[in-house]
Image 1 (spheres, rainbow, N blue to C red):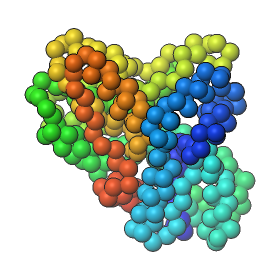
Image 2: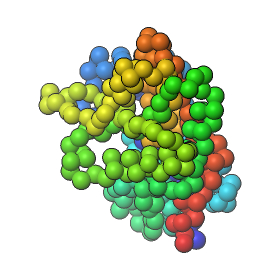
Image 3: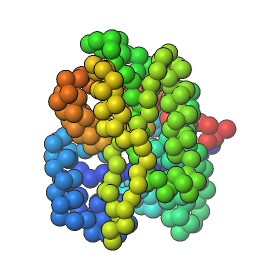
Length: 296
């Protein structure tokens, strides 16, 4: 039996003043331009700040009640960092810890980050959950959200688009399984949701160039591109299901709810989004299953 669990998230800031150092972490130590800082600050402000840290804390609290062992949250790119959380748990007596990435298609990236810092903490044994985007419980949870949203659609002429965060194409070409995992998950969700048709799009692309000016090609098709094609095809609306995301953050609250909804409104289309899993019981069910599989 494991002594404790750590949920590892991408992380975000609660104070807008922390956006510059947060962006520096994301950019691997490169300072963000004033223009980028201003744009990210504008987006955070437009949604009233990101609720991600608060949601993850609630998820950990609920999962702890299920597992009856400590469950803590660590962030890969912001406080609290994994080394701090692991060291604290070790000081409290934990010797065996389960690690679950709150990124179901990218667990290897989060696990590697934890594995690197855990080497400096003596007396710990860690078990890592592999990418769990193919979980049937998760598949059914996303499928139910899509069916519920479709049932409230204002017209019959619409399309379903499932989205995930884009990555630089170079990462996928180097062998990262992310795109394949996302597309397999989408296919399974479509079956469980009884969809006759659907599309996959990638959203929230980053900068067009790396520090130093080297251009970046991002994984597509881009959500805007897909929506443009649907509009030209005569669709009156779209149901967007962000199946690559687990909780509300700016990629959901701004990129879809504000930016994409305005795009649809400007073209005379309606847009509905499936609700995020957040700290709702069906998602806690999913995480409990992932956690208990670490002890099997």
